[in-house]
Length: 146
Image (cartoon, rainbow, N blue to C red):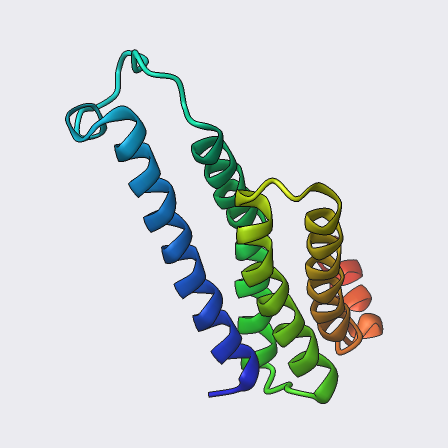
């Protein structure tokens, strides 16, 4: 398994941890009885500050995770694993791990910096795949199809 695929497995485990924390806080705040319903009507209890943060942190991970998994799979299928892609994958994982407690604790500026670092690591992975494309052949296929 490449280091990039290992990073993907770690981020998936982190995602499950996000879900576990958010679901646990949801049940603590709203009660098991309400949490186990279809939640067709709003809860009588307001979300806690922590629940809101955990929910938003999970949503944020869910926004970037498909891109990360997709690009890691593309690189694996293309059999590309370079020092740049390995470092970018590790940086993405480390930043996403740091992001969760920073968001949960409400640390504003450092959290934004960590998110930016994870985004640039993801962009680096995408850029590493884009430079592998034979753009002339790609354009020729596009012209032939039209």
